[in-house]
Image 1 (cartoon, rainbow, N blue to C red):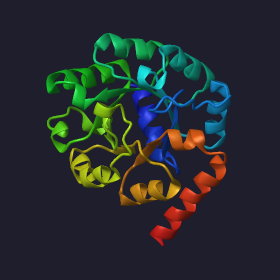
Image 2: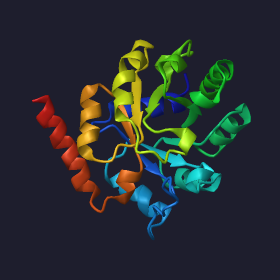
Image 3: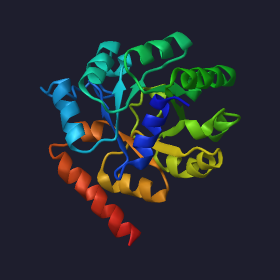
Image 4: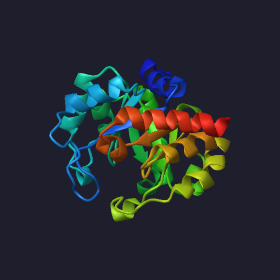
Length: 236
């Protein structure tokens, strides 16, 4: 397995606060998320907050472009996930060339044979497959689950993720994700506050992907401290 692949997974699994912090330009309704900040400002904020990994949304629904990915990977040494609807090996090769360490593969958009082929292709390139699911059957026969991140998307891509999300989906699907042998089950989207984040981590998720909530908070330190103390309180 390549150094790049193990770097993304190890950074996530070894993090005391396993949050993948996201960079995206717009929310699902078109609202500006940078709010006058530069991408460098945001990446620096996340680094100072202890992010183990970053996610960069290059999909057009959220105003993204591959230029955004290049800008982030040029700014940070943290492992970076490219979030977009990637469906072809050439797109994975391009992600690798732009400095990504992981790539989003959306099971709902890909026939099983295509998904499996792309997982194998990603690993061969040294990229971590970040396999996004919403139903248990999408886990059937996934290759190399121990080398993948398997993420439960709490929102609905059919509505361009404009729904409020279903956090119970993550709780329902966690046993099935773990049963594959995945070391890094992730809950993604609709995580709006630190109390929800604590609940998901205490339920057994190895990590969370949090985007809009962290971009919009005026006090990321308090958000993260509340997460830490809530987890401690629940565990105790």
